[in-house]
Length: 411
Image 1 (cartoon, rainbow, N blue to C red):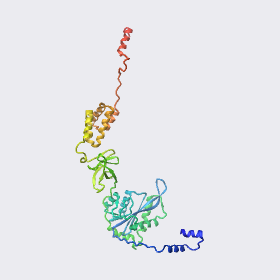
Image 2 (cartoon, rainbow, N blue to C red):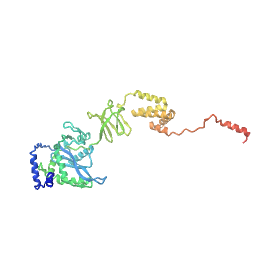
Image 3 (cartoon, rainbow, N blue to C red):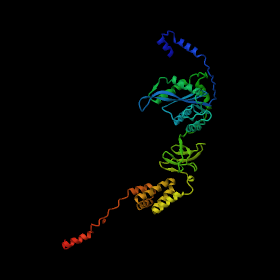
Image 4 (cartoon, rainbow, N blue to C red):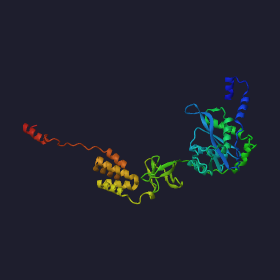
């Protein structure tokens, strides 16, 4: 078309556009077209999934129209598609859209064919791809196996590619919506009235009829949905723990300095072997600054450095020693820092003051470093007393005797 327009504008070309098309086709020659294998699948065997551009929807925060994402899950046998809209994508959103598709279909397929997007595939490899752990575990919960395509080979999932193109060109072409809920309702109505009732161009059968035949072959849904978690990698520190959201969780002995995989949710934190995926330790969630260490992972004997530290505390004062022994017995590795804090207070404020604070802590049952520090910082000031500070100033009794001598003792 661009060549035709330039010929008309610059050279006074009077023939039609079809003439230019025929001429260019003759120059191209007969290009060799590679034959594509027709992929046939059994009912319930395969589903294909992909993202596409969705309609423009008014973003509630700014009031401006914003492009949404169109998620399409297509059954390879019946061509039945589930179309869902979302504002953005992440690993969890990608998984939740799959779960929504499974629930709408009433079951799951044995295989899901997908592209190599990061939400599903971390490292593409046709023989051994590294799947996103959250996506892999979600599919395993539904009894599904992921089958990523070869890089640069979208024709392997041509059925869902055609479904995305059909959706973009037919119901969503030129459409704008005020809310994403309205857009999804419009898409669902079109799906039920037109997409499912159409005669498919390849199978020459109605999609709804083919889906009714395939639906009994879908896998059963689990009793409860998948429990999502956050994941990452951590290094085991010198205290044998990894840090997760400002709390510390113990790893098995022998893992100091090594990397472990971490899965966490609102209830548990799991440490996994990065090579085998085997569970190393599972802990309940702890508060910020707290430790979770299994009893069997703690050292069988007290290290010599810790014994020396407890000896210093006992020498400083009886109450300081008793408090520090309690901190070590009940807080483990974290108690070492608290003992160091108590000894630091003794150097700063004096042993007598801190020993008195430790005795008060033992009496009231507040056996923490924080209580001792607050007690020392808020202790009442020492009352002032008169002292003889200058040798030139005589004792008051001498002034009294002098006054009595001069006045004869009279008042």
